[in-house]
Image (cartoon, rainbow over the protein chains, first blue to last red):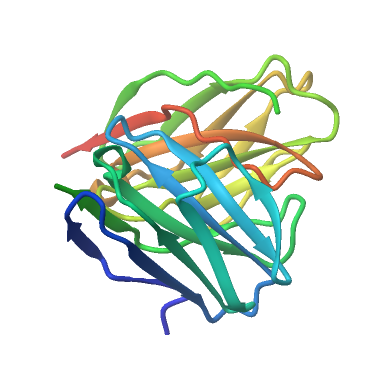
Length: 113
Length: 110
């Protein structure tokens, strides 16, 4: 009965490859997010989706693209992976927007070789 | 959103109260104070949030000063499992953007 789940937990890949990370929430929330935590442990928001509409898009490279097939899923696609993309990526969800509490998934550790 | 300032690290004895301070001197009237924590290799976990009044839940208490320029998270009886990085975040009512800083690394010692 995991609330926010991510797959895979670990992802090791070569530079230049394309990969996807999946996120699912069973909380019935309307908004989902992707965060990146770099080697210095700073968490930065990348995207959020509300009712299939992108409502935040930080200045991330366009190699990163969020895809939401339905409101319970928000997948992260990354094209042409670079060494600097190595990080832990967290998915989160919240009931709505504004000041609603966000609930985080366990994270996906991406290593680009 | 207002920025926050937290001490980089703190220690606490097991069973004692852990008091984690946060300064947010530029907070505006409609901004909430949120606390999250991140235990090693896990996703951030929501603890508590508040606007003006002090708040308490099963995990912690949040004390916000009258001028709202600072707050303190209190873990009443810290356990070893409370060892984590604690983040204080100030967030506007219409802002989904949770801006995490460096946080405070709390180490609970036996």
